[in-house]
Length: 63
Image 1 (cartoon, one colour):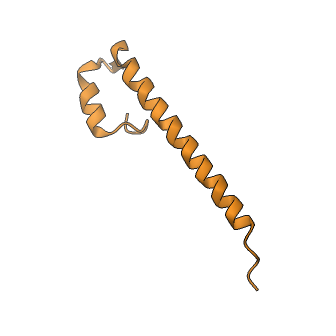
Image 2 (tube, rainbow, N blue to C red):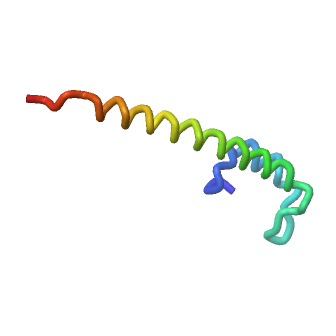
């Protein structure tokens, strides 16, 4: 769960829903929300990277 980007706080909240090595379906909404947040952050980082690539491409070469 840590490798999936869940915080230890979230993992602690989900522990009651973890049994015999499996998560119960009741956590689907929480994990779906986490995935949406991660996708949003990826989008923001991609936008920032693209802007930085553009800025560096417009810099004159050092002499």
